[in-house]
Image (cartoon, rainbow, N blue to C red; front, side):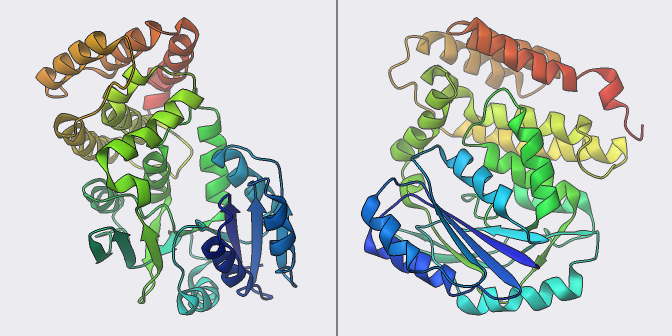
Length: 351
């Protein structure tokens, strides 16, 4: 099997049903379609069961978190590549039809990590066609810079990716102390470190920004992840700083992707940290109802004044001191995971 289309779904309106039906129509000897519905809606279960056909699997489960729904789909996937799509986005049949020949031609090239293309990104004010620069480059530093410096929402997450790579990355991320909304950025970073993204020369995917368009509603979505992870809303203030810190450490020290020379790793880590730290500097973040707002604001002021010129150990200490205000257990878990990655024996890769 060349490609597994993974379709996690929770909504149960008519538009969602039409998108599920469209996805099921792609099933063929080269493409398996797997739909996993976690809505718990009895009527929807009965309706989508009628879409089943050869090479198409439809599973209905009790309501669960999005990550669990995705993990359930990955366990069923058999394709060499996987493509996870969302039930509130738009799909292009011609792009899907073009994928098996492309996988046939390039799928055995170990330098290819994924397939992407131009994205239609829609919000309430209009539509734009966007494309990430240099993600198809053989130069890994250029790929990371092209992604890190892109100013919009992360539509690259919706790409066709090697299943073995996705399993490796999500297995690793599953061991992280918490799973948060910016970790889609981290996942794409790790994919780009694995290899280049081929670009399909046609409209690839239609991404509806939805709640992510508005500052208040977007951060409420972020807050839901923090709450599910057992973290106080005060941590929302560090959102982009956490993304900068974690990504830079992983670039330097993580060994789940092909080795790159340490000098190149450091260069990429600098690019990543600088880009995400700029977001931390300029994007306002809310405290919501946290009683630790003063402490979070004081930490942010100190970190901004540092201009990022702190050691990773000092950054980790500051993050954990804030988390410890509301949970010693969460602070210790975060400290243990990231301190282990900072050990010198982990950093000495191709030094």
